[in-house]
Length: 116
Length: 111
Image (cartoon, rainbow over all chains, first blue to last red; front, side, top):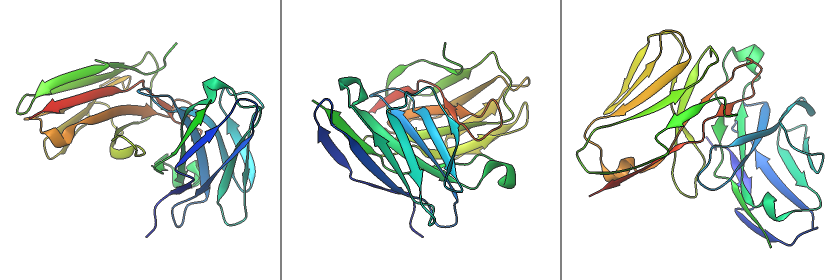
């Protein structure tokens, strides 16, 4: 049973560029959440997708956008990259909370983004 | 303001020692989760505590949920170098599926 997979594992970009990160959820999961994690800190919630729609959003600017596809996979897009966007970006999958009654999220290994 | 406060932020101990990590909040949580994250990996769920006063054991790890469901602790007995990692507590304060994490406790266990 494949877990959550993310690609690429590492990425280097320059300021002002745009980046797309990809995530395939764990088999059977329909909800994908994205988090940003600075070095040595806890993850910060960016947004969550279910049924191809953004259901919740954290305190992140509109430069951060996403998409979910019919097969439940998801993309995170960041425009006009800033140095401060350098971080580990984590994808987590789960069953929709109000159906499962729980919020058990399974995380991928992340994409390490460096903005120069 | 951090909704979930973890302490200590850093801990460096010798193999065989015991330690406790704390996760505190002024808010009530229906449940709290503990994760461990190793370098280059995503967080891995260790346990979910749901009932106030609940104690769960996972081998040498003991997790406790406060009676008021505002705090939790993780106690490790006879720490091993393999316990090294970032320990994170997390909860969903609004019960909407949005996880809030503490800032983490970095544990280093020296052989």
